[in-house]
Length: 471
Image 1 (cartoon, helix red, strand yellow):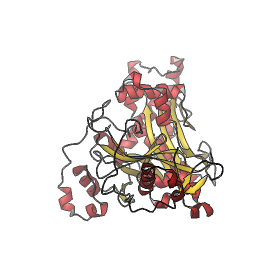
Image 2 (cartoon, rainbow, N blue to C red; image 1 turned 30 degrees about the horizontal axis):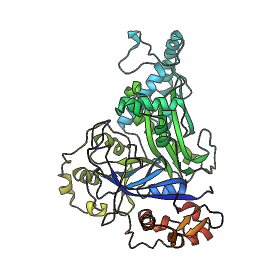
Image 3 (tube, rainbow, N blue to C red; image 1 turned 180 degrees about the vertical axis):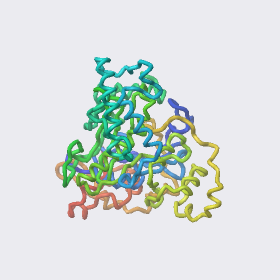
Image 4 (cartoon, helix red, strand yellow; image 1 turned 90 degrees about the vertical axis):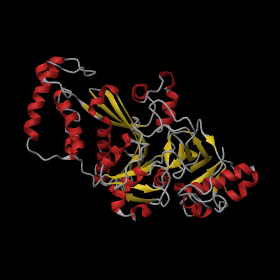
């Protein structure tokens, strides 16, 4: 298959929601509304343009919530990684983890207890104790009185000087026995999934399969340990050779998109979710410092106003929230957050919210429907189990009216030798009325500006725009 960005219409649909219920359960009704499409392959630039318009992928399924109708509106949130400064809580997370790497002691454990934690792979307890003592003295002398340096502290014990050896390994997003076993352990313990329902096939489809076509990253400086190509990766965190966490990420032209995070439940004390976000920030910064000039953002997935466990995303500042109706990012200010927490469902343009009287907004109380479940990462969305619905009227925020959009010029990739690429207006004569409708709806959902036309093909711009694809 040639390197084209192919978009296969799935349609407007509804499903049960993973945010409206306790862990391991979903909502009783099909209250989560979205438009979805399948992407067998896609350029990283097109996906960058899509996430800047509120889209997100789960494997090769790419979807956009209907922000006016879905039960739990999901706002795209991104962090300015270059301007980020860790707050007190975030520094504490780093310091706690570093103390463990330095001494081998978890919070609450003391040397006088005679405790040397059971670190997988540690063979010589005496050597571990000796290493802990040596590292402790050395670390205190070296860092005493120094101000907190974000990158220095994050990588202070990488490849280790302490009691434990900490490593990070960036690898292509592939399903391996080791990563699947950690995923299974995490899903069962943290999200209460039934063990028999956590399959290697599901793991591969959700967190390994990717439509992104790799493209070489141009660095002007050194790029040791940095990704060589844009695309999908697993960032493994290891202590003494054993994986304790996995950041599933997409490396894109404007930054890093955090897809999912998996952690070993035995390490719940370490705050690995918060720590992983800091390492992802560091990856963005290091890429920028190495000369990847367009890189600067950490996309932290979706932010849900009344999901308690997702509020931590707003603690990473400065963060910006996407207005799904205008596709403009706005600072996640206190007035905007207060209003959205008080009105967690439905859509109102951000510019209207920000024009409200500040005193009136400050007096608003969070909705009583706040969800206190422990779903602190984006849920597994895919096309399976979706109920296909009719396109709503009016159209979802940010999407056009299919009846008004001119889809005729949109290109269709046929794969046929004689005519591999033809305009939709010519291809549509071979489609049923349903196929024609689905083609128009896809163009309306994605936006004509991101759909390839014959002019784009002649001008060499078609690679980074979507072509309709009917398998």
